[in-house]
Image (cartoon, rainbow, N blue to C red):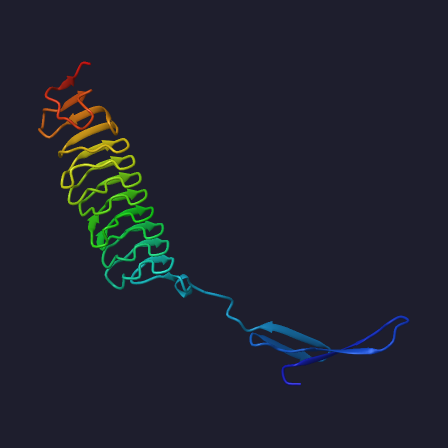
Length: 239
């Protein structure tokens, strides 16, 4: 009766007797008898029809995609074409376009555009801003507010603030916080002036470079265990 359907099963062969089986419609199931037939159908919606329908995904403003709890949660109408994947990824971002953040709490920039942050707490400052920076690694480029910096490695470039066009490669590689055009390659190495180069590892530096003055590029070898400005086009210190 109603939405229920009753079937009578009769034993065949040498058996005897009958049993009734009752099918009961549920909240998302309908039963429609018709003669000797019955149609069983689902009335459920079949899940989310769009990414924004998921409880842990968001698509705010124009063409933004946030996947993960609180991803891009501060972004309402002030930014477009941003992508954040991970719990709290891009959570602090309020304005800015074309940013990509991947990882738990990745991309803690508040404003900026064209930035890429891959890894836990990249751009960790939270109130920081910057444009066209790339940070890859645990806590890389924590407080950068400059432009077009590259940091690759755990905590790489974490001392940079307003400098631009810097390249930091290696765990804890760093430079002068306000300097620009610095190149630091190696674990725990750091330059101490703008337009400079350091290559090696902590306590053992192979190359020291200084190109702060146009036309006076200088390269030093074996000048010490920390960055030291060479005094000639090729400055080699003996043993």
